[in-house]
Amino acid sequence: MNVNEKTQKLFKITDITEDQAQALMNIACRACEKAPNNADPVELETLNNLRQAFLSAGIQKSDNKNAD
Image 1: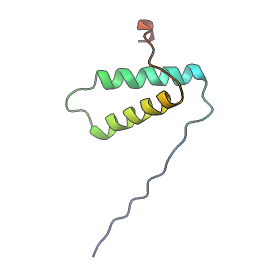
Image 2 (image 1 turned 30 degrees about the vertical axis):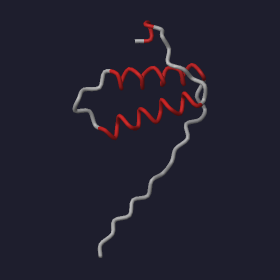
Image 3 (image 1 turned 180 degrees about the horizontal axis):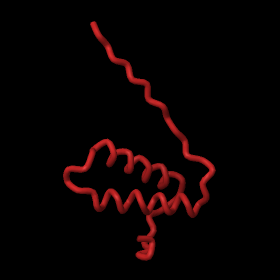
Image 4 (image 1 turned 120 degrees about the vertical axis):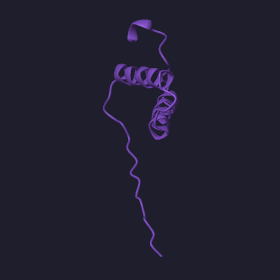
């Protein structure tokens, strides 16, 4: 029997400022909101995981319209 094993690495983002974390949160939110219907589901899941990690760290989505 042929079994393909994939090893997944987990990455932790460190050494970024709170402002950089806020910017990444805003980018992830905009990308999910503007994603086309045929967007890659793996990419959308990754963006959602990033958003969830920032929410867990206390970073909220910015309502700043100038962030675009």
